[in-house]
Each structure stands twice: as C-alpha cells, then as structure tokens.
Length: 339
Image (cartoon, rainbow, N blue to C red; front, side, top):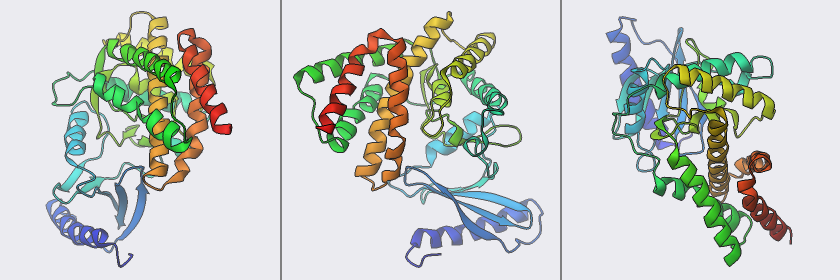
C-alpha cells in the first residue's frame, strides 16, 4: 500500500470493521486473513479493489467525494435488482466517505472473453437483461435525457476534440452545419419512446457471471431513448463487429422487445434509423470525452480508440444521406488538422 494513499488506509480500516460485521451476521466464523488487490479503475475518479480470503471474495468501491457520489449507484442497484437484473449485492456502505462493500460478480468482463464464436450467446443474455430493466415502470426519481443533456453531451465534441485535440475552431459555415446536424440528432433522440437507460451498456461493463450477465457501472442511468443501450452494446469503444452481424443482433432485440411490450418503433427500418442517429450522437460525445480525459485528466490512452468512433460515424453516414453534412464537416476538420 503506498504510504501517501491516505484514502486506501481509511478504506482498509473501514473494510476490516465491515468484514467483521458481515462474517458475524452470516455465522461464517472469524474473518480469515485476506488480500486486498486493485480490481480496476475507470475513466472517472472511482477505483475498485477485490478482497479475497478463504473462499470469500468481495469488491470494494472507492468513490472519493466531492468528485464522485455513491448515492445514485446504491439507488439504481436496488432498482435494477427489483427487475431481477444481476447487479452487485451491497453488503455495507459509507456514503459520506464514498466506500461500498459489494458482492463479487466475477473477474471476467464480456470484453475479456467475447469473440466471433460466443458473441451470439453472450449478446442474447445481455439483451434479456436489458429487456428486464427496460420493462420497469418509469417511477424512480431519475433524470431524463432531455434537450439540455443531449446538447451538453454533443457539445463536448467541438469543445474538447475540435478545440483542444485538433486546436481548431469552427468558422461560421461550419458552426451553422454543426447546429443543423446537432439538432437533427437531438430531435431524433427526443422523438423516441422512453425507457430506463443504463448509458454505458457495453461489454466492458458486463461480467460473465451466473446468472449472466452481471451488470456494472449503472450509476448514471436516466430515462431516455429506447435505442440508446442496445446501440451502445454493439458500437463499443474497444471492439467492433461486421455491420451485417450488428443488424442481425439489432433485429433480434427489436423482435424480443416488441414481444415483451417494450415501446420500440413499430417498423424495423424506423427503429434502425433511430439507432443509427442515436449512435452518432453518442459517438460524437465519446470522442469529446476521450479528448477531455486526455487534456484535462492526463490520461491519453483513450484517444487511441477515437478512430473506431469515426469509423462508426462514417459507416452510418454512408447509409443516411441526411448526415452528409456531418461527413463534410469531419473531412474539413481532418484536413485542417493536417494543414
């Protein structure tokens, strides 16, 4: 343990107390000697540790206030569990200090194991879990994906990618084109039927688990467009699939969703167009976020995944003539950056 890591020292003291309580409550006997190891960190300020000892395994979330707030995680964990979605059991919490003691959903994410052979099976399980929480009544006090949030997200692209990463600014014609494209994407998102949206429903946040999948990283959930999460699942930051397979999976989801009473578009073509435009809104946001993580937070490695998102956008523009203006704008920006 690094001596300067005061939070880790505080977390270790807290964890010892919680494990004693937990073992006593469950009549597991004395707490065995265990090891605390780093489990993962993400693009936020949160980190995760795993405690293991004598056949027991737990995950500890360290979410330092004021940058992070555990309360949404706890509330949405209970909400998803009520729909029989496999989320971590919360054994203990200290919301003031940002510590959670969680059940362990396993050590392998979908991203670790997914390949061309097992993807159909894994994605089928992921679709079933998605449908389970999309069926929840929209009664929890969650924010909505409204005009302001969608706009704030898409504006990360000109602010952080164009401005900071490329060092460019839109001219008047580019600004006008950007406004038209942004409005088209936002209008499409707002016109969609609404459900509970995880907002990061991708292989990295799904664990191979029993029952499958274990679902993580849901603390930013909102009520919003029905195509959002399913588009996320197949247009991921870290792995790409042939468009023909993606279309097959989308159709599987659409058919299952209709049968389950989820308010998807009545016609597959309309559903796919909504998914395409929703994806482009998200891809522009993610490119902006990855540039911000590099330039604000000093983590440049995420920029390596930006070309994948431009490839997704390009592929959609090829199918959607209404986005031709976005293709021209991106080409001008790339030429300007080279110059």
